[in-house]
Image 1: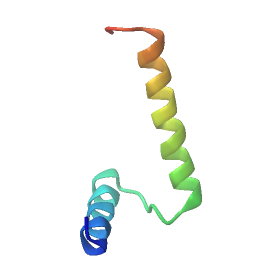
Image 2: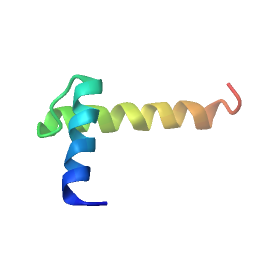
Image 3: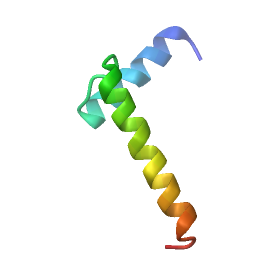
Image 4: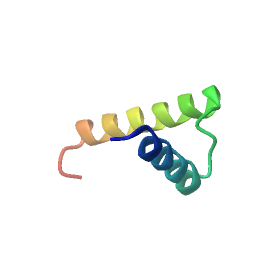
Amino acid sequence: MSRQAYYQRLHTIERLLGCDLESGLQRTSLHVAVLVLDAQETAVPGA
């Protein structure tokens, strides 16, 4: 993947999520949210 394509994808993700991925606080919040979702799926398989 080219650097330009990578940055375009990041920009698309920022637009869809409505957040600034350059913000450490927002990146951390997103990371925690993904960890929680993963933990919930692992705790209740098939739900």
